[in-house]
Amino acid sequence: MSAAAPVLEAESLRVAYGGNQALDLPRLALGAGELVGVVGANGAGKSTLVNALLGWSRGRPRVSGRVRLDGEDISALPTHERVRRGLLLVPEGGAVFARLTVTENLAASADRATGRAYTEDEVFALFPRLRERLHHTGGQLSGGERQMLAIARALRLGPRALVLDEPSIGLAPRLVVSVLETVRRLVDERGLSVLLVEQNVRAAIEVVDRLVLIERGRVLAEGPVAAMRDDPRIIQAYLGEGAA
Image (cartoon, rainbow, N blue to C red; front, side):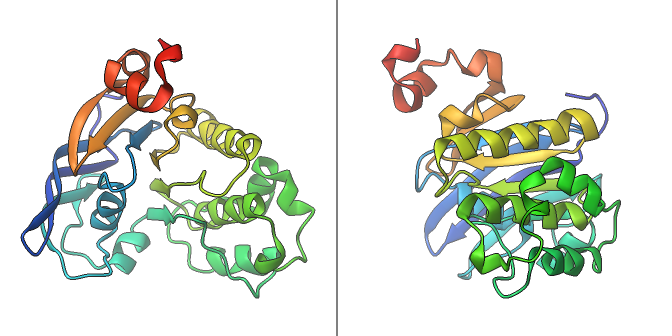
């Protein structure tokens, strides 16, 4: 990780619903050109973390702590202002306009870009399949194609930090590998900073630089992926004894 200030940083981030503490995160940092994986089982607090970073929730939680983007404290900003500053989320299941074509989906994103937006040619180089589906609507695309389009739409908005929430959900294993390898290319070749929030630990561990394991809203373990591969908690709970 670079010695420079993190692109995305959360400190003392706590979320509670009523009397229940859903998240207690001392610190999470994402460096420039880094791919960090946050993994855990269902109910571990991953979605709560994503919502807290973006400043959004379905309920009325008590949220405390700080979220910084390139050193700027964005904790008090509403979700749309965080997005305007370049904190982009690709939510679980992707987020595309079902009645708009691929071309229209990408154009709608570019019209709202405030940062260094990726061009159509750049996103088609990453996802050649989308070029073949230009005139298909979002609703006509397969699950994998929708996930590609959702990431492409986020890139067209010019992200400073990209958060991917469970991109593997509903995808065939080969498509999971393809999507995550493309994300890895974005990090390596374009220097994009990506926070990958995943339940699929086997897939995440193949592409991330660092891994953060959370359970019941707390960090159970974290470190470089090379070390985390050998962590007994990861092996036993997510990789199986054979992985040892």
